[in-house]
Length: 336
Ligand code: PYC
Image 1 (cartoon, rainbow, N blue to C red):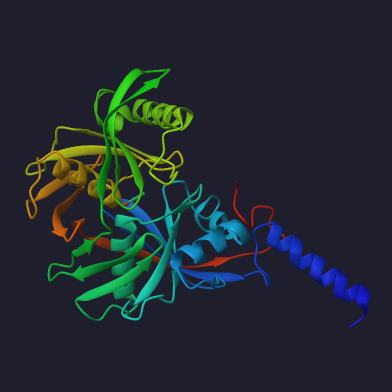
Image 2: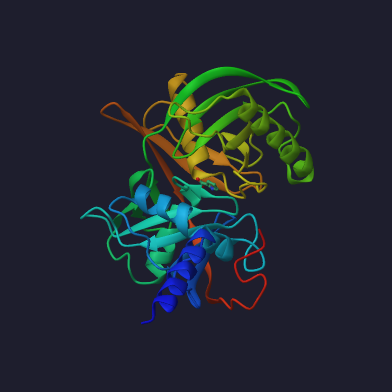
């Protein structure tokens, strides 16, 4: 090969990577869409070049640094919308796991996703890849396990959850002083007893505006998780409206979308707060209702020094499709 050709190829390669795209470019991807209590999950089962890395965290950081346009291409418009949580299915990193998963959304990456994990298990069942009753799945937040129940629901044993800071007051320019708890349930949450109005879909604009103002005020205050983690989920809670539920919530996801389900990591964070305050005993059932009226059943168990949240819910596969990528299409890699 002539030197000039070699140079051209390597600089093309650099620019693809710097554009957040792999070399060679994928032409198609196979996806399976599901929803868990109303919240959509899109699992990429093939076509996305697998990221290198010995841990799920390394693989996720590789994607963030090198292939971020693929994330947008899969979940953003014109192929998706801002409520879709995507998941890249990878080989596992642990011997006894069936798969690895990297969750992402319209604005970035998630460490874990409760509704998404339940959607993934339903997807693996659909693909004939979850044959046993129990499966272990590697995520950037750690390995989780899931049990396939007789009634088709899935019970997720999540990563350990905890209350980090209680009764923090944040000054929100648009709302005044707002008090809440900071907790971890696989993602970082600020949980507020709803003083921002009714938790109903008819009040959605107000809830979104208030939650975004609180998230911005938290960022401006410099408050983070213990290792500088961004507190990017805001959860309001109030009295339930469906029989047998303990609480109703509204969860703002890291972008502008709200969770249609009760949010698995958000319910985990909520149960960790209740447990820390002595209001939820190990094994005691907690039924969390979402803003759309769907419910997750949950409880916590003490395992050594850790508190493990369990979430039980059902998911439905709604489509299997091929995504096409034509670089001549100006929106081939999504609308940013
Ligand atoms: O179920 O954990 C969850 C979740 C996080 C963001 C959207 N859903």
